[in-house]
Length: 96
Image (cartoon, rainbow, N blue to C red; front, top):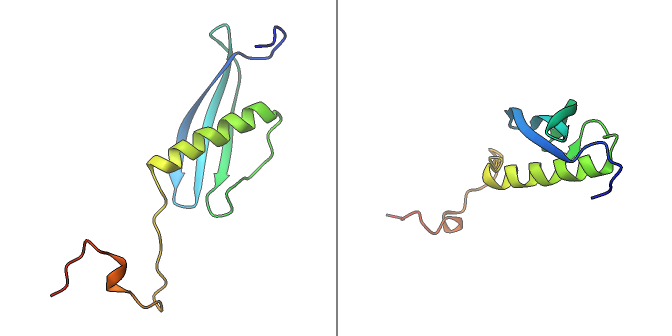
């Protein structure tokens, strides 16, 4: 790690998870002391942050955090009401 740095760690927490948006809180730390905190908002539909971040490293860390979070909690798929449902699409469902 560079000797001259603003922080040496960052912690993320999900503050709110709506189906289309995730709100994160973060705290950057230096020598185990908070030096910066903030709020980040991610739009799940466009897969973008609602506001750009000041630091490319923080942005990449937040992107990784959200990627893992979404792997564990995938968004629900919506089937349009006018779409035909194919029973063969779900091999675990038994037909009578």
